[in-house]
Amino acid sequence: MTFHLNEDENLLYHTQANLFRGIEGVGGDLRITDRRICFNPHPLNIQKDPEEIPLKDIQEVNKKNTLGIFPNGIQIVKKDGTKFHFVVNKRNEIILYIEKHMGKTNLPKF
Image (tube, rainbow, N blue to C red):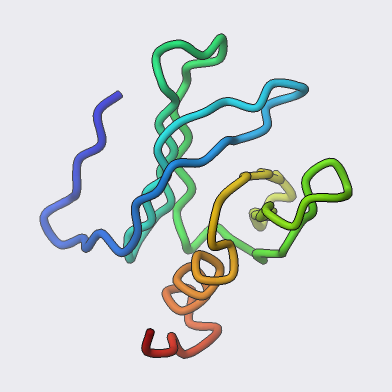
C-alpha cells in the first residue's frame, strides 16, 4: 500500500519503525499526520499488511521498553483496547506529536 495524504491532511512526522505483530518485528515506514498514524511494512517482511490508526480512536500513548530493557518503544492503545507496540528512534518527540494532535499537550519548539 502506498501512503497518500488526504487533501486536508498534513504530514507531521516520517521515520523508520518496527511494529511488533506477535513475535515478528515488522520493519517499515511510520508516518504521523494531523489525523492518523500510518505504518507501511517493507516488502521483505512476512506480515505485509499496512496499519492505520485514526488519532480520534487513540485512548493513550505510552513509553514502552522493548524486551523490558531498551527504552525505544511506544505503545498505542485504541479506545477499543487494541494495543500496538512500535520500536522507534526519538520516541519522546514522536509521543509529543501524537499527543498534541490528540489535544493532550502543547508541542515544544525544537
